[in-house]
Image (cartoon, rainbow, N blue to C red; front, top):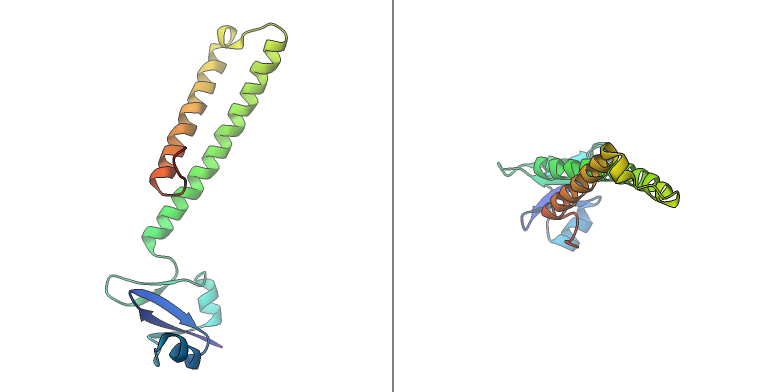
Length: 134
């Protein structure tokens, strides 16, 4: 089975049937034909490159952006977990009348670092369009 790809309005459309492509999109000839295996290996995505050719897969810029977002989100989770653990220590210490930020400056500095890094990550995610400003 094949996948038929064609350019329409600056985008790539895909169909599994040429008759459907003609009926739905008014295109009678595919610009590129690929196998289902090739299409699936490319994540069922295609784009038009700077030379006007249809390329399988994600646009390099979109892929880089997606990978940056994924990396930042993982980093945010890591720092949030670390901060939560350190906050737990502070809460437990306060139950015993201790103030760890005064007695453990390293803990205080690390908590501050985690909070600052989380804020930087969230700002960048907003810049990338992955989040809305809070």
